Length: 296
Image (cartoon, rainbow, N blue to C red; front, side, top):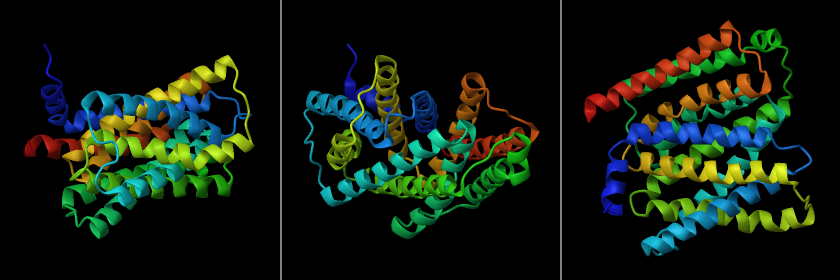
């Protein structure tokens, strides 16, 4: 019979693969968001996502007989607030930009993680990490170059770009908070506070502006909740034993996943500049992954 504790230890030992899985499932979440009609308010999507995730997490917490309230409640609540803000911004960006571009902007967050991790949790930034981050950042700039956007006939409002970058900043702060909490809190308690805070804060707003989803929209909404839950689980496990700044470069893979979904499902144009930028992003990921392999 499979021992759940031993199984969890095995997951913990494959940090880089946990983060790859997290990127994949988060990219599927963005695909679901993109497929939902704009008549459904963003706050409602985030609320539904939180409800599905909360039910799954509470079921697991009850199964494992874990104290659901945790030890550092102020920091857990802060993690929930930051995650909620980030998710609202990310959903807005996905809805108002090509999927590939919104994913690229979201993945500027590793730059902010490096700064915040150094300030708040005193992580050492190695030369390899700096090199990997610089390569990834150059790749993002190549993709977001104005002439590049013009070549693929894409126009993006400055407000949408600003909101997307705000989402990246909130994501970075949430990552650092998760890393700090991982020293004292159970993985599922950390995961629980995100949808719990989201649900409590957004419920009044959603009830005032309620729009009833149809069956097709409900299908994609359930997908948002399930894939986000899977992404959060693998992400939190991966961050538990890996420096936040190092882990973030592995998560660049979501840029590649998002681009693939954009091509396959929304006929988005990918040209040589985008491929060059994506290749630089992937190179940064490989450098970090190689460092992890050498160390373990």
